[in-house]
Length: 276
Image 1 (tube, rainbow, N blue to C red):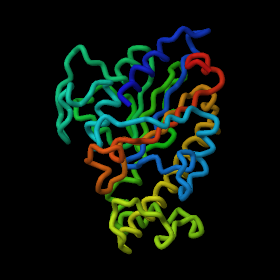
Image 2: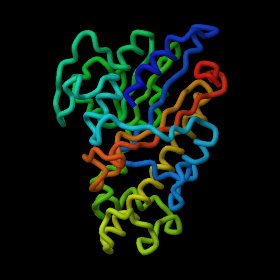
Image 3: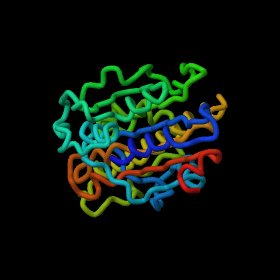
Image 4: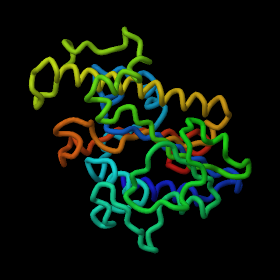
């Protein structure tokens, strides 16, 4: 996951046929989810849109966060530096970056990109001057000047642990999921390290339902991108900051806490930049 900034920087400066053919970048980031998608082999997942995206994209099966909690993990996404090397391993810190460290937003801005943000950053470092447009907006590219490519960091946070663990927080997002698409707590398969209780079944089923809602919301963003004529010029990253907001996942340095989904869609015109 810490390689993402370097990958974007490489593409931003790659030799292209014309100066105005630089790709746009859209990061769609979930909070607190593991690879519980159909395309990752989860038979109980209800993620038709993500599965369809994966079929025409690069599906990374061995993507791991650098930390099992959001702020340290997101600092590595943005900087390309391990949190323990940068000093961002503590939650909600606000360090001053060394001059030699360039976050991906700054690298892209120097290359002429317009940068946007939706939702929280939680980078654990001072992000002043990194973002040109910061709104609760699922189509931020509509604010981009016509002569600039864009980088959009879009946080869709309905899968956060607070929503996953509490009915009152989940009621709004789950109201958007049809009843026949919801998981029956009595029929879900609990991981063997969780207690076999009705409440644990309800929580696990609710988390799977929230991932289904996230699947729909991601698709809505991509449909807006397509409708606005931006899809063919935009490389899309779909990922999570770390594992589920449950015991043995979030905050735990286990495979379950660090293994994350990562889907990268590269439009046809830019596939030569990534080897096919």
